[in-house]
Image 1 (cartoon, one colour):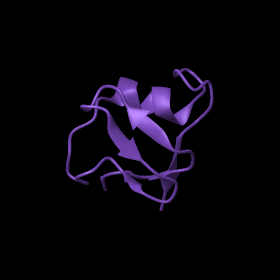
Image 2: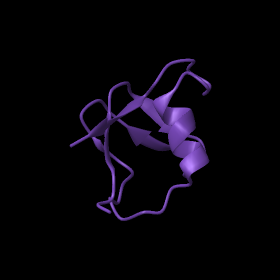
Image 3: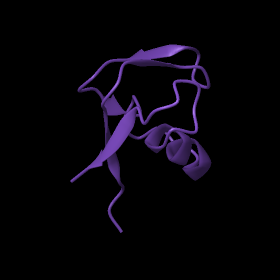
Image 4: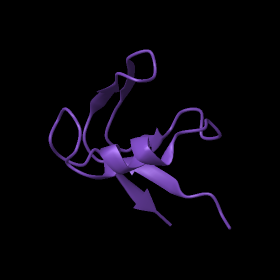
Length: 60
């Protein structure tokens, strides 16, 4: 199965990754081969995060 890829749709600071700043259009995560837990991806894909809105989206 191909690894899913994500794009940032709202600027945010990743509080779980040394406060790394992500800007709209960036790929998530940086570096691209970084391991991110499924639970964390679900938070960022939904409104269940501190910003209360999705901050990344899956891309093809």
